[in-house]
Length: 505
Image (cartoon, rainbow, N blue to C red; front, side, top):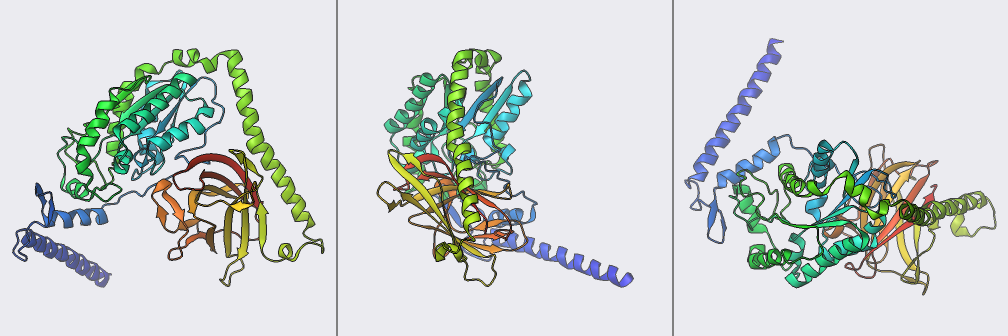
């Protein structure tokens, strides 16, 4: 016992002594004794950073027990739980549109994103009716893509309020102030036409306000670039034009300039060079939005909303329910029936050899987009690995109208195993999507190169997409639910949902 105590004491003394030596080294280094370069970080010759602080920041990130992201994706590719397609009675529904800063890159949970905090504040304030705040932020999008998302998907979910949080990605892409206000006005006009409120917000960007920046934030500002790799701070005047045009918006319920929302914050708010913010920053932004929109949210808003007029509500709900039924429930039922017939027929010796081998090829039902008939083909092939449970998934999208493969497809794929969801994720392929699977007894994990737009996993021979875990074992049923987000061009956003396939390996 005494011997064990001596060993533990010796280790503790060595550990503490090591930190004392490290601290002494940093102190000497920061005063330039060991190098002629005392200040090693400079941004535009205006400010400097001490190398000791940089090293301490690194140590802080290593030693502090920081939480990892807990991202919950629903079947629409939005962060958060599923919600009813038909808005429940006595419910005020809010969609928050925006880029990754709304999605919550860097947030420690779904609840600590801007929409998460906002919903919590609204729930604490109100008890007489339900308020839904749906995080429809998508990584990499700008105002044009948000307009497409609103008019092609979100309208069917009968929003009461749409909050548009923009600026950063449009600035990086070089969107003109005129084009930006056109996109915003188009969203506000949709609100007028479909009887919901629209609030447009200009978001804060690192270095674009009077906030006193910390040492970390100074480094982030130095590395902040636009899509042409120019210093983003050079677009400061352009962002001022965005702000001026914000005041000129018509048809909007409100417009909010949050460029200076962090001016009184002395601690770090920004967590990287892409103006993602901490949980505390998300809370501050959400609280600012809450104070402004709260007066417009009341029981009367719900009762007076035209969609809640009894006759109109019934007709609208029936229409949406029928559309949802035929696009999802009925089509999935038909597909499952086809799959069951296929499974029963596999014992027939007259089947082609390809169906009697270990290779499985399944086609989804066809859906129409702009007069073109589109279907998805899923192939499950044996892997080169020795394990029989390791497979290669090959997915391609076909235009049945001219029997050609569709290129530059972004997929939103949900895979369930025996009715339990394994994951929902975005994937991008220029031609055929290829995914390797490795079976083990651990939780499902996905690895590969990610593309900034929608943070999709991309096909890359140097870094293949790999799904590992308790996946593709025999005697289990796997269901693929697939939506398309781009076709033909990575910038050609569409919102085509409802492809379904069921596979029993």
